[in-house]
Image (cartoon, rainbow, N blue to C red):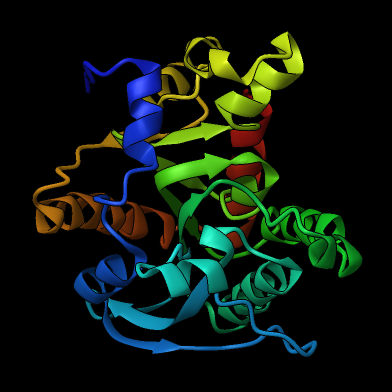
Length: 259
């Protein structure tokens, strides 16, 4: 898929408030969604929404970052940047999915894990590392869709499964272009230049083998975007659910070793 936007324009589009939202994705993609709360360690991070649902009649577990829509929601959710409790909620739901043989589907739109003092005090690094370790060995299919920002380990913790797809106006990188420019050139104003150097666009990442595909989107027709995701998800679930856990884990390991 050819995207005529420059890397800087892709970054701007990935951050746009006109993009499809987590509630829209869940409402239009799945049936009978039942949200589950809490990390079972005393907290419930609203930046991570997860629960049980049906897709084409089959049960699965859905977990997504949520930036919120109103200013109040965005502040409460740290603009979609999860705290440790969010990652522990993700892991709890993933292990539950494994126990009952349900595929795990994740949706990512986050600038990264919440960097505040409270998050560090509660073990942000450990929570992310635990997700990478445990989800990499999950014995059920895991499919990820990045539909906006995919920032740093905060995004990777939700994208360490069997298939990763990106909407065409999304980004996936180790840090923001502003952060890259500040570190490398000591000048955050060179963010547009950094975006080009970082190879963070869907087409660049597809070329490098870091993702499996790019999904067309239309910010003026969210239902068309949902249908494009539905087609990919249905195809991959039919394929991956036929694999035994040993083959699934072996292929997942090779996937991450190749880039």
